[in-house]
Image (cartoon, rainbow over all chains, first blue to last red; front, side):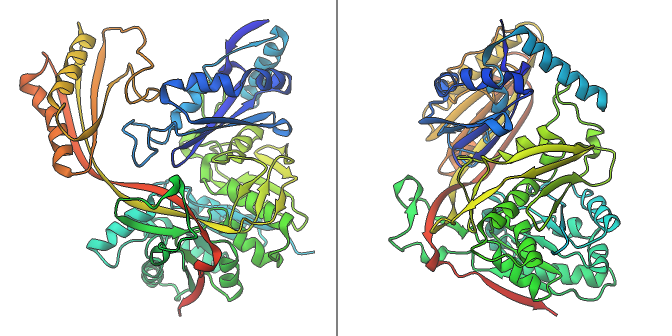
Length: 123
Length: 447
């Protein structure tokens, strides 16, 4: 097993509505979906955002899409119209989630890298 | 069985690129068959900015880039029988319609049949006690605008009445595509799975390039071909509910499982219950398959009954934001930047403001207002100090921003590149309103 940033096995996109943030996290390959579902937990995400004082973190699993959706409440310090942060939407925060350390099997990680290489090659 | 409908998107937000719609329309024409063109330009606070614009100019209040957006495609769409649907009416749909009619004249085109959809403004009924306010109470600050998200059926009604252009204000974003699908296939209010398919199609389209390689590139991980010229999306929906996502025939951008999956979940909360005015969309059973280059097929959207209420976005006065920035570089830059920050904190301590100070390049967008995340190890190099101060009155915001300017002569050594600004802020909140308080209307305004 090897520990890597979530960025090594998944991609992510944030959206915002008011003071609520959602971060969709999507496995690059089916072989790392279990690791994603087991390790990207509500508790770990709440800890990652503790300095922004979320009032709630909920996680929805989408096995069909090898994805999970994180909904993080009251973490945008007012949202786009009230925040003092340069990024009031929280658009950069998908990459904060992608810093979470995850532990995966070496061969699964190799499969992800091969998948990414194949995509790059096709283009 | 009715033929499939192609729907293109030419803008995903107010501020989107102005030269992207024409390749979409040319691709729709080249593929042939029934098609519609959509423009989404109305984010949460955009409509309130339109209301403020109308205060100084009654003719304003619609999307400021309306004419540059439509000029390249209006004649093509009218000639090809491709209706244009956009929420670019913002706070003044009739003003937008008049501007489009003038544009047609300027281009030497016959005056198109333009429909406006109104009734989203619920400012007058906010005293109703059945309204459920976010946070439990009506906002204390003065309300600038209150608009309900309308559904897709008024758009379909306008198209069936022969509208070539449909101008809306606040409307659920996916309705811009769902409306022409309802008109095309004759779907009705109880066709929940069909409405779910149309809503998912509209959701995929509504942010423009976000489904075709925009908001996506991550070099070495997720590379996007010709990212400077991303082709905007085209979605094909068949009578049996299959959605095919493709893009305009340009060299740039891509459509694959990853771009589509990211957009499926964009701004979604519970994926089993994405609430819209027309249907509750369940995307948990959706499958995504790459069937050809830049071609992704989705199946399995399911619909349940629409919610009993409509969502209202309420915009209020949000005070004033004062901002100022100054740079320090070279030896001991970080220490001088921190000295500037602590000097600023002391100098604005008595102002009635909410304060944040960033050290750009070290500690900004991931951080909280009180900086509790801490900074990474400081290199020398270059640090830009940014002050942001939110105040109820303009003078306090100006005073805070002015303190950054003052650092030139009475701050740390070598500070340069000061920029300051003060902007009026609009805050938004939301509420759920009973449907009987909202009366959508369709009017044909020309000819």
